[in-house]
Structures are given as structure tokens and as C-alpha cells.
Image 1 (spheres, rainbow, N blue to C red):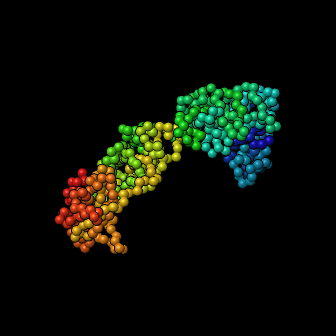
Image 2 (cartoon, rainbow, N blue to C red; image 1 turned 135 degrees about the vertical axis):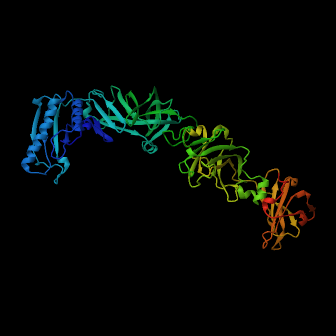
Image 3 (cartoon, one colour; image 1 turned 135 degrees about the horizontal axis):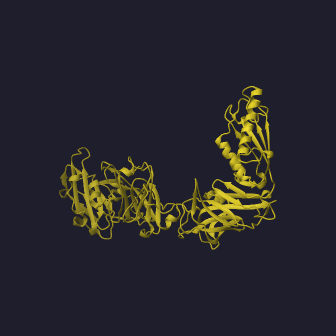
Length: 564
């Protein structure tokens, strides 16, 4: 007979194929070194076996053994005492003495090898059982299928090959050829899927009784899960509702299962329709659920924008920080014209994707440590931003990441972050993005083919001051560009700059920033409205004279007013 631990008698613990004929009627108990006292766990094992085989035991053979440490005579006596210990316990719990035989062999049968191997210190039980149909419990992990005897009459459970398994991953579902749709093509997702069949000689059997099934759940229970059966459509499995609820999850130890009775033959599952057509998740078990706004890693704004913040994003735990999510429909964090003039930057310097991005708002995660100091997130870590779908007007929304520069302004990165891969039911209520954890994000729609900038129609000529930085701003749009020097006859004109054509030249403001190459302390600036300058129509040239400029020591001393 094959060795079998007691708990396996009625539980087929191997995944895949198991036959009632594989049920064993023998097991071993083990003893401490040089001891013949039956351990409590061994008594529990015997009790369980006796309960499981109640009414079917015809006889039992008990054989004692030892390891090869000690003399042969001593070990023979020790093996006898071990066998008697088991014999006496069986008598104590009510096993008839006339059904039991006792044997002892000392160290003669070193089944597990020489050298004092602990497993040789054992008692071997061999039970003779009535060979009849029996109730059969099939188990793999948390999955259980209880097959009552007579379920597949006239076949007996001992003659049947059972196949059973539970599925818990997208890969397993795909390998099984399962399509997560009902018969009408509507998407469904699952919280539990299992498979069972019964065959004799490869031929499927139909159950005459319901089976008791404990089907392990993959996620948390939710309202609306119904019991479905799989329908084979030419090798692809789709789903058909039974109209019966799965019931509530039952928690037993480490297992959470849906417990029900049905005539299972093939696939069954606890499923519910997907909440919306936009739910494109490839995860059959529903993917991401709605964010728990009370979770420790969640922060959200009054407008409903949600940030999920990973551990390590900041130098302190967010539980000890003031972390707020702020929606900026007016984009307050962006540089205005005056700030661009002050920093000496063009729009492309702080917002390189300006021409491609039709932005609607900023979402800022503002964080302060316990000392009240502003903190920047670790851009090498990820952060999940979830925006309420009903407040996102873009058809194909994207999110740009921003970071603070050394000069102190925010630079919106050129990289385009698409809407995150569909994460499941969450996408019915939120647009989801996984982005670097800088904490600064700009929402908008991406334009692959932006309008070209205006042509270089005009020239701005500066008197005396050469090699200036000329920033050209449009008061109406807020767009600022850095004017390029004019090149004529292969020579760069250090006092002349291209000015682009605009719909209304009255909206154009010029900032001249001049700093002497060798004398850094010599700084001058001029802020003027373009159409206030002298204009030479024939040359299409505006002239900015030196007397218009002002001396300053530092750039933050510029008295800017036209940009406001």
C-alpha cells in the first residue's frame, strides 16, 4: 500500500486529476527518539481517520518500527511498545479488539534509510475498508467540491475520475479559452471561477444530484454577483446566467468562498455585468475598484481629483505631513507674462508642449513636511492620478508632468502621458493616469499637428545695445517667444530681431534684457508696447531706442507694468 497521511483520505489535494480509486487506507504515525508515547497530534490524526471511515472499517493491522540507533534486541522491544501504544489508544476510543492485529519489527525495515533517520521511528496502520460507494470531498486550496454518493448513478464515486480547479488570474482564464462576455456579447467580470467534471473512461457523466461547492473568491464581495455557467461555443467559453445569486462570501480560516449547490458540469462563476462600455480591462476579475477615499495612501480635492501616493514618495510618511490635492482651473501655477519677463524665459522654456496641448487645468499635489516646509515628490517614483470622468471634457485626455526648476518656476515636461491603460471598473467613473510622482500635473488634449507660429514678417531694431535678449509677448494669449537675430547676406545682425506676424499687433509687448558681456553689473531693460515704437513701413521695421531702456542692478528690480 502507498503511504498516505490521514487528512488526505477524503480530500484529493493534488491539482487536476483525482480518482476515488486513489483513496488510501493506510498511514503512519511518528515518535520521538527512544519514546513510545503517542503524541497528541497523532491521536488527533487517528480520531479524524476513524470519523472519516465510520461504518466501513473491517480490520486494522498495526506494525511498530524503530531507527537503527541502539541494539537490535532493545529496538525490537521499543517497536513493540510503540505498536502497543497505538493499539491501546484504538481500544480506548472504541475500536473492537477482535478487528485489530499487532506486529513489531524493530529495526528490520528501515524504510527511510540508515543513519538514525527520524521517519523510521514509526507505527504503520493498514486498514481494511468496505469497498462501497462513498461521499467524496475534492479539495484544492480553498476550492471544495463535495460529491455525495449516488450522485452519478449507476456509477460509484470510487470508479469516477474527477477534474476540478479554480481560476484566479487573467492568464489562467485566457489559457482556458474563456471570453469574459455573456451570450449577448455584454462584458462581465468575475469574483470567482471554477471548473468541475466527472468522467468514466473519458465519457462525461451527468449528475443526478446537486454538488456542494465552495468556490474561492479572488477579490472583495460586492452587490450584484450572480451565478453563471460556462457555454462552449466551438472551443470558446462564454457565460449564461442561472438567475441565482452567488450568495455572500463565507470566511473560514484563510479562505473566502461562495458556497452554493448546483449541478456543475464544466465552468461556473460568480459574475456581474461590467458597469460601462468604457471598461476595457483585460483583467477578468475586474481590475481596480473605485478608490477608497479613506485609505491612508489617498488624498483628494474638493473637485474630486484623487492622488494615490506610494510609500517613499516623500522623505516623510504622508501620515505626518500636510498633503493636499488642489485643482487649478485657472492654472495659477503657470507663469504669466510678467513672470516670464522676470525669469527671462519664453513660453517654450516652461511649457515646451504649449503648441501641442490644449490645456484645461492643473492638478497639484501640495505637500509640506512636519516643519511646514514645501516638499517635492520623488520623480523616480510613480503616482496615480484619478480624475472624475464627468469633469473631464477632453475626448482623449492626456496629463503632462511638471517639475520645479532651480530658478523657482514650474516646467511642464514635453513628454506626453496618455490616459493610463484601462484599469477596470474604475474607468467608468475616473480617468486614470500613472505618472512620475512630482506632484504637478497638467490636464488637456493633445494636438499632433499644431498651428505653425506666425511668419517672421517684421524686424525690431535696437539702437546702440547689441546682443540683447528680446522677449515678445502676446497680451491676449499670454504666449511669449524669444526673438531671433536677423541674418542678412550671411551675416547675423546683432541689433535686429525677427518679429512674427500676429492677428492684432496691438496686443504685442516687447521686453529688452541687456547685459554687457564683460561687465555683468551693466544691465538695462526696456518694456514697451510694439505699436508705440517708431515704425518704418517700407522696411517693416520697428525701432527701439536706447533712451527707452532703464539701468538696473538685478533683474528682479525691473519695474514691469505693461505685462499685467
